[in-house]
Every structure is written in structure tokens, then in C-alpha cells.
Length: 620
Image 1 (tube, rainbow, N blue to C red):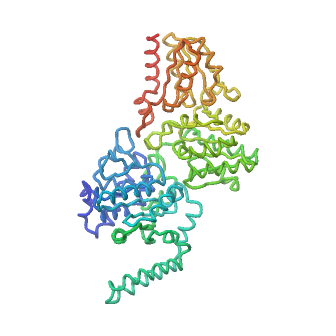
Image 2 (image 1 turned 90 degrees about the horizontal axis):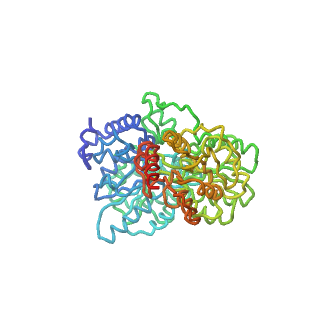
Image 3 (image 1 turned 135 degrees about the vertical axis):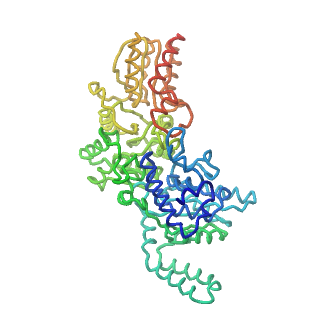
């Protein structure tokens, strides 16, 4: 196998050019085999195999730098930098990350995980290089999906003024997670399909190659090519702002890619190489269903069918059903997502109410302020975004929604620990950053029925409301405990004395189990479903402080700014005799791994909680 000859960085340069197609095939088969077992980002990586090979052939790593936007397409890069053995533990606790990590390799120059950051980071690396008098090459690789994010344009605006080399590769596969939307996608599609330009360009180069003056007329040909681009391709926006545009280039032609990268390295300004690739290339199921194989669970290689069959509805499924029902009852309900109609459960809403559905691309800031405008215009928008992505729109939530006290509902999916995607995706900060905002109301459901009740309640509130719920199967226990949702009021599930457990949302099932184990040890134990993180139910907490020795708060959120901190502050203000034990995630980033393992490691699993409670009891 050719792949076995690549043991370390730059070993690919020992592979004969004639063998590049075979190496690409081996890499694809390796990725399919490994990801079918571990799960991971498959489609994006299959589409970037030849592009990554070309980068490693044209550059000298680690001196040269590659910044991968999002980083979910960096698996081939990991393979070519000697990390083949790490794929057996890909995205597992203690194993190799699914994203670039500086601590993992000196060939990973920048940690990524969220979208639209690569050009800004690359520009910083270029300026640092120039100030220090270095000569290395810096390349930022950004997908056309990430180019829908506003931060990319802020960076392009600055990069256009550069007078030293900086290369941006636009990996264009007409996809982000789902199919791309908006004007940027339309613009790039015009370039892709501009056959007139492509045909004329090819004819010019063919004519030059047939003459004995080939090299002597290169400058003239470039001028002609640039004129043709302005004439044939609509806009030529990149060239207009001062960025040299090269392309479109076949993203699956290694030799052609190497040539254009080397050409770009000779320029003394910012150059954008437009590379066209196919997401999921080389694997039929991924080519046919690229969105499904963006982030794949373990699957059967022969069919592409997931190995783990879904048996219960997820919280996302429940949200999806409730949204359709809300829209049927209320014509002012509209839905907004940031490039994730499938992931957030809005696909069915989009099908039934296309005129009331908005996919704004990977642009969370715009999504929130757009929602504010819809609300001012008399509609009731629901913004469905993952917890770790919503934090990108903090300023817009604060100034544009909450300052005006607008009726926007934030459906926060993937709240709490999400597992294998790691630090950049764990939804463990939303309670903290949202709690700091005046006029914001925050809820978390204990089970699938309560999510439905909270959505209906949020619609009636006519104020900013955030509902956070976890990834995965919706809890179906405690169905008999279904009391109406009231503003700022918690729900008493079991009332006794001694110890009081106050659990937030996803922690209610764990609290229920901890309560049973405490009772087995002879401890009387009250259990309260917090429901609201803001405003907290002060009346209930004061009552518990009076007739319990220990209050234990439980939340899947960091300690700082969380529910437990607010309860402890209230206890201090009241000078209560009862102690408050806050079960939280430590104020640190949580790496990738199985959620159950992570909970144990950070001390919020049932065993750890019980141990902490008993230790606290002994102190009293």
C-alpha cells in the first residue's frame, strides 16, 4: 500500500506522480473504513483528499502553515502528517481529535471547530510572518458554506489591502452541512457554470502551448484572462476588491492543484484559488446523501446505513413536531436556522411552511438580528441554533432582541455535553452567557412533554425566551408529573426533608436516580425540577432553605454564572443555615469523548454526585 509509505510529514513527496490517483483511492478507503467504526465527518473529508495531497506536495510543513476553516475536513491532513494510528481512537476520550489541534501536531497551526475563522487567523499568521522577516507560505482553506459567515468578509476586506503573499483556497462543493443558500452560493454557481469563460480560457492556453513563444506571452495571456473574467463572469467580486482570483480549478486533479498553488505562491498580494470539489466523493451513499454523511454515526460500509437504529424520539424530533403544530395554530410563527435545517429539526417545517422558513447560512449574528426585525414587524420568530454556535451571536441577543424586549424564542439544541466533537462543540456555557442579559427568560425541560409545554408557553410570553435541551433521546420518565408551566416557577416532584435536589433540565433523570440511592441509605430527600434558570424561583428556594440542611443544585453547565451560583447567592443574601452544594461542570473546556465517560471525569455522573453529597453531609 502506498499509504503505508507515509509515516511522517512530507513523506508524500516520495510518492511518484503517476501514483497520486491510487494514493487518493487508498486514503478514501481508509477514511471510509475507519469512520464507519468511530463515526465522524465523512463527506467533507472525502471531498478534500486531492486538495490536501496537493497542499502537502506544494508546501513544506510545518514551516508553511495551513489553516483549516471549521477543521472538519482535516482527516487527510492528519494522515499525511503521521497520525494514521490515531484513527482507531478518533474522537474518543483520550484519543485523536476530529479537528486540528496544536497540541496534537506542529503541523496543526491553529485550533478550529467553528466556521468562518480561517481567513482572519491566516491573515494574523501572515502579518506575524512579515513582522518577523520570515518567508514561509500561509494558506487558509475555507469552504463555500463558511463563506456565508460575515466574519469571512471582514477578513477579506483587510486581506485585499495586502502587499505580501497570502493564499486563500475556496473549497467549493455547493454544500455546508446542508445545501448552501443565498447570494454567495448563487454567485459561485455562476462561476462554476460559466462554460463560455472556461472554454475560452482553455483555448487560449492551448494556443500558447502550441507556439514557440509560450513563456514570453504569459503576461499578455494573464491580462487577456483577467479581461475575459471581467467580461464573462458576473461581478468578479474578488478581483474588484483587490484579491487575485485563480480558477475555477478541478479540486480532484492533484497535479493541476499543485501547479496553481505554486503559481499563487509567486504573487505578492492576496490570492484566492477557487477549487471545485464533490462532497462525499468516492463513496456512493455519501455522494447521494452528503448532508447525512456530514457528521456520520458508525455505519455499514456496504449500504451506508447507520449501525445503531433509532428507537426513541430525540429532543430535536419533539421540537420539530411542536414547531409544525405551533405554525398550524399561529400564522405569525416563523422559523430561522443558520445552515442547519436538518440538524435543528426544521426540515419538516420548511416543507410545510416554506414561506415562513428562513435559512440564513452560517451567520448566527445575522440570524438573531434578522429575528429581531421579524419580531418588530409583527411576527413571532423561533431561532433554532446549537448551543455552542449561538454564543457567536451574544451581542445581537443582548442589544437587538433583549434590549427591545422582543418576542423571540431561542430553541437551543445540543445544550450540555455533546461528546465526540469536543471543546468547540460542548454546549456548556449557554446558561451563563444568557443569564447575564436583562429581559432574557431561560427554561430547560425535564422530559419530552415538558419541552412541548415550554414551547407553547414561550409563544404566549411575548418576550425573549430561551429553551435549552440536550442532544439525543428525549427522556420519557415522570410523565405523571406534568403541571402547567408558570413564569419563574419550579416544579415540586417529591417533597420530604433533609436534602433537597434542584435539577436543571437534562439533570432531572440523574437527580431522580440519586434520590432513590439516598433514600436507600436512609436519607430523606426532596426533588425539585428547576424549570427556570432565569428568573429562578426564589420563593421555592427560600422555602427549601428553611426546612432542609443541604440544597444540591445540578446542571450541565459551567460553574461560573450558572444556576448553582445564583442559588448560592440567594442563600448568602438570606444568611441561611442550610448549605448549598453546586454540581456543575468545572470552569474549563471539556475535550472530546463519550458523554458518559466525560460526565464521570468531570464529576457530574450519578456516582460522583452521590459521593459529593455524602461528603458534604459528613461536614454538617
